[in-house]
Structure formats: structure tokens, C-alpha cells
Image 1: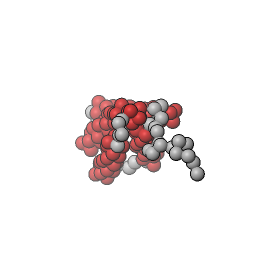
Image 2: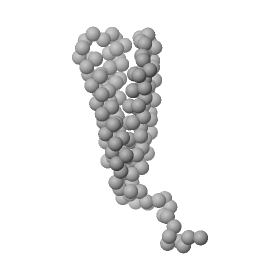
Image 3: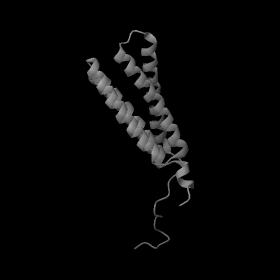
Image 4: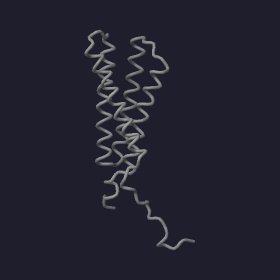
Length: 142
């Protein structure tokens, strides 16, 4: 049996460096957020979108900016709040997206849905990996 001095502390100490994989997901999340925001802005600026197209563009811009804000908050503050916020935001965006697509009778390709799913997944993983190894998580008083 291990001596008490050799045992891992409970809870285990977190590393202060988020690591290269976390930065990879943060970078992907930022890129997807810019793509979401850019798509929405271009659609709004074109002036050729239907009412449902404008609604989809607005929701896409809002989620793109929301994703950036949550990743930044997770990196600075840590904690459980950013994880819950990104999950609620992703589910809300997906529900709104499906509702608008159904109401507008749009035909969406599997590639578009796949791209959307990868973007939402990257945002979620970036927040989770950032929060797990957040520098503030180590400095909090226990």
C-alpha cells in the first residue's frame, strides 16, 4: 500500500497550462465562431434573404459571438458555468436552426449539418478542456 506522502491529493492538482490540445480546440472554436458570424453578416448584408433566412442569419451571428465570449470566459474564470452555458447555447442554437429549416422548408445537405455539428462540438470541447485546466482552478481556495 502507498504511504500517505506518495498518494495523489484529493482532488488531484490541475495543471496550469491548458496544453496543446486545448489550444487546438480553442483555435478551432474561434475559427468556427468567425465562420458562423461571417455567414450571418454576409446573409444579412445581401438583402436577398427571406424572413426565415434573416432569422437564421441573426441566430447564427448571435451564436458565433456567444461562442467566442464563452470560450474567453472559460479561459479567464474557469468553473462549471461556462460548460453549462455552452451546452445550453448549443442546444438552443440547434433547436432554433432545425425549427427555422423546417418552417422555411429548406433542404439542407448532410455536409451542412455535419459542418454545424463539428462547429458546435469544437466549441463545447474547447470550453471543457479550458475549464479543466484553467489557471484559476489551481489558485482557488479550498
